Image (cartoon, rainbow, N blue to C red):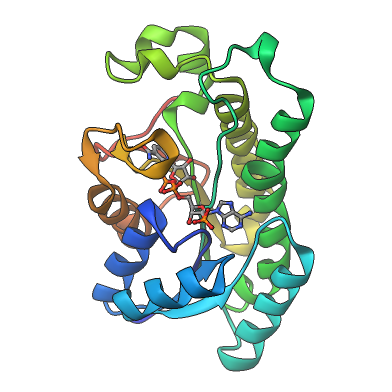
Length: 239
Ligand SMILES: NC(=O)c1ccc[n+]([C@@H]2O[C@H](COP(=O)([O-])OP(=O)(O)OC[C@H]3O[C@@H](n4cnc5c(N)ncnc54)[C@H](OP(=O)(O)O)[C@@H]3O)[C@@H](O)[C@H]2O)c1
């Protein structure tokens, strides 16, 4: 199958936006998910994609998105769970209220499960269905256990309670879906865009978001396995 149908969450800016552009440039039909209609429509116009309203914490928008895709396309080939937030704000864990942690999990973990479950019937109709969960090496137990493994540029971020623990949960979610969907042929992987300058990190990353988006798109297009954490260097991260 040459042209695939892809849905990307949180794609009005940053790495999601760049992923949408890269997949569209590669000839795929891209549904650009965004929670804000104005920002989403503008981003879609800039990327040659189609805006689809989707707040990953809002079940009504998730159901409406699934219904629209069902009616208009009848299937989904690629789901990219990209939307994420952080609530760390330079605070140490002792200063972070549980409500803030819960907010991060609502988007970064529960939102992924909600969108995935809503889109699974559509992914099952694809002969090449795959789910890419955009994650971070900061959420691996390898880095949590030995923060020096994060490398010099990321070492300072190795103990972020809301972001890193929610990405660790996302990594576990990724493996559980990969295991349980293996027989259906739907591939499920965690994807690392690499460290990019985006609003998420106050634009402090060394690479532009376009590099991260192209990276994610390449992993989606070229990837073959399931249950892997594919990294930006063409290899895999240890979980
Ligand atoms: N930047 C990096 O160095 C880096 C490294 C590794 C992994 N990542 C991952 O890459 C992904 C994209 O992050 P980014 O760096 O591009 O951050 P970003 O520029 O802050 O973009 C985050 C996107 O998620 C959207 N979003 C947030 N909450 C949402 C919700 N409830 N429903 C729908 N969309 C929502 C935002 O929409 P609004 O504009 O409406 O807020 C925005 O479009 C994330 O999963 C992040 O963890 C980033």
